[in-house]
Image (cartoon, rainbow, N blue to C red):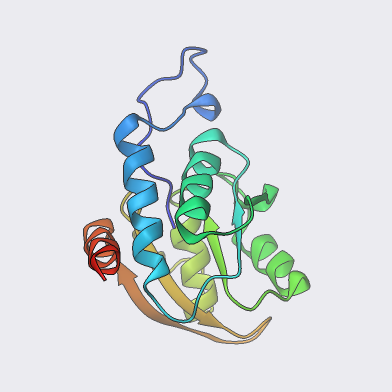
Length: 160
């Protein structure tokens, strides 16, 4: 999942300090409710340590009823996707939501699904890519889910 909408500029002026906007918080939670309607369920959330990603992950965790997300430094912007994949393989998690930034997330998806980080998959803010990946082996891109679709799924689930 790519982080939701963030402020254009942090009060500090540092990009790494940018936080979610009110709309970003609401969208992240709505996308989390949509993810809750999908199978298989998500067991854990790992996030970039930057505030906008962490806040997105926290909102999704609340909507999914999960423990708070854990920070993973290799999900930060500019990190090597191969390093991220290696850390994921060591963690041996079954179903995990990763929350990070473009273009890193797109490159990571390319690496996991196609074996080539240069095959970057574009993600919109709060968009989700579902990848099936065997720890250290090949993967498959199952779905690209824009935030509006996930929001609708979450509303449908709430009506039940």
